[in-house]
Length: 193
Ligand SMILES: [Zn+2]
Image 1 (cartoon, helix red, strand yellow):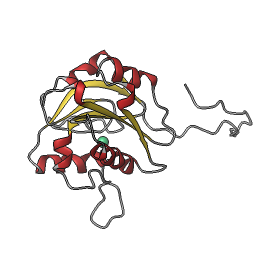
Image 2: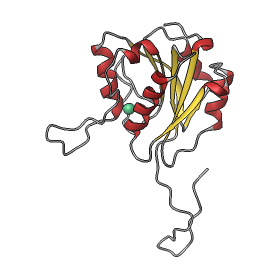
Image 3: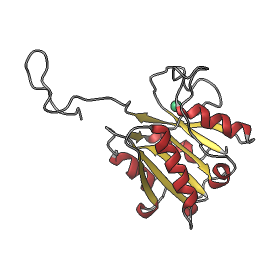
């Protein structure tokens, strides 16, 4: 699938403690050539899987341009090496970034949802939910991230996944509240910048 910016939309997935990075919006507008009015923000107070599902559901509900769809975590910072994502010829293309699991991007068709693109056709071919947290047999442990669930459905529907380009990703953290006091009695600084 060749990317067509004239027929594209972007969805920024916002979770608590994530600040939308201006570099992301700048990249969407200047490099991916998606105008501001075709960038939407989706959020959920707790679960990333719900944010991603809301983003996909919102994309499929929209009329007008939107055959090509980009999705990004709000804290993604694109770099020069991100541009190949727009050139990849696959049904689902995702940019590589550093995650808590070092080998996360080792498989040739690995998929993680920091910054990715696909087409409306692919998402319409997959039954919701698109994303879900995987758990072990008795449901007592989470065994991965919600991305693998989506990737498995993409492959089962006969579509291709490719890695293309790199992005920087600020891992989710729980910074102390600005009023928190450390054991030593010092007031902690606010959220690190
Ligand atoms: Zn993932």
